[in-house]
Length: 306
Image 1 (cartoon, one colour):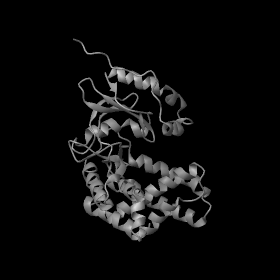
Image 2 (cartoon, one colour):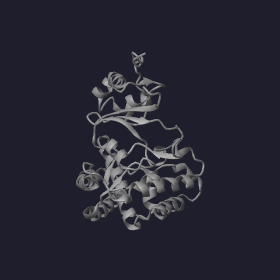
Image 3 (cartoon, helix red, strand yellow):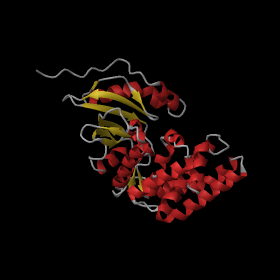
Image 4 (spheres, one colour):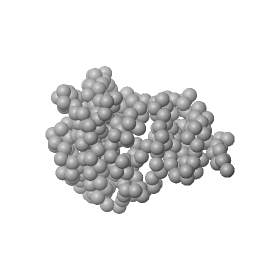
């Protein structure tokens, strides 16, 4: 007896967080999401199996495949960050990352294996969690980037180009001086920007518990570049755990040192590219109208003596 066609709900509700993030910058994509999701449910013969979820930039639907396997349908806008996601996940070892079951390169839509909801942020011991992230960083960044992945050279070069127009928006002369120093560090690193396959956003929330492995990595924003560029996210995240030590700057340095110990990344290059990541965030913030450096960024810079 032929299988019944998948049931497609008449209305797929978009999470408020996603609506807030995209109502201004991608209104047409947002408006079309319910019908787009329904089209992929039909195309890949899926059944929706739960309430819609949302990241900062994607709609995630729990689904079941025709064979009964549980999966997650991920819909997102097409941009530099999403374009190489499927390629990167298929390039890395399946033992380290979530599996891609289906994908449509035209729309950057992915069907991914379903993992558990528990992340490394839920691991009570933040030092142990950092070590696990660092072990992933070591393995992922050992892989050469495949052709077609955007490069750190291009991303960092654009930062250097944009900086002169945005730095004057900082109100504090000392902060302007600091950021110009970051520009100089990035400029020095640019000629040897690297060719490894980087995740870009490798932190505790992007490592999920799984059944076939204890932990698997999700949600890359792939980049071809120097592994030192990927150290920063573990400093920025699980911040409360660093504060709770009572010695914040020392805790930042200890976490940074742990990542270098596990990965073997060159210290000077990691420091230089961490300055570059702070520069990147400052440029994003000033472009959005901010006139000062976010305090967490200043604290990291001070702790590492950047």
